[in-house]
Image 1: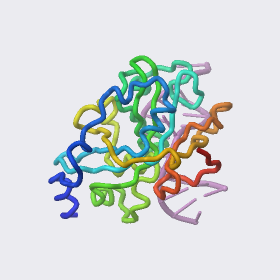
Image 2: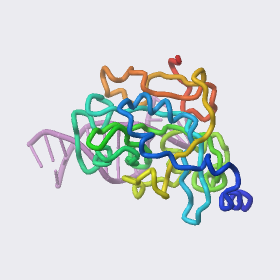
Image 3: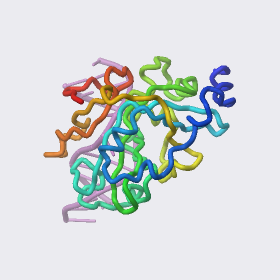
Length: 222
DNA sequence: TGTCCGATTGGT
DNA sequence: CCAATCGGACAG
């Protein structure tokens, strides 16, 4: 624990240019599929209150494109207290609570009033791994962040992060690992059997052979 | 207010 | 395969 805490606090692991937060323009594109794909390899950082870095490389994402996507909470323009975050400016966090016990972390894209979002489904742990172990009550590194609910627990992302600005200091994304196109796989999204014709849309993206991806893909293609 | 159910997880 | 666990969405 002490070693991890110190490393995080001293922030010496990577050059400053790699720790720069992504600008809002990164999230402002009008095609969620492009952004979901581009996010692979970037690093999600959610520091502790004491400033220790807790982070992981994004290895799995899903695009949700309301209002014309039956799997999206914003389908058909649904705008409620819960989905309000999806209508905010790009680079806003959309956090929701599901199954009575798990949080999910999404990034709002496009522009204000267009409810597009990218779900972050899995990370490869990098920094603050001991914090993650304590929060998850397990030691197996592979189980720490290999799912959308798991990674929120590991990074201590809860309701209070809803509507957070990803260009701010609470939580952000920065340059991570170089990804080549051949590593990027796509297939149907997980857990959306209710979405009828949208159920099979290949709007899930992941890094081929990465052991932190949440589930072994049924179909996989480039 | 009542009912239904989920963008999951972990254990049998 | 199935239970956990509770807030959101919507009908009435």
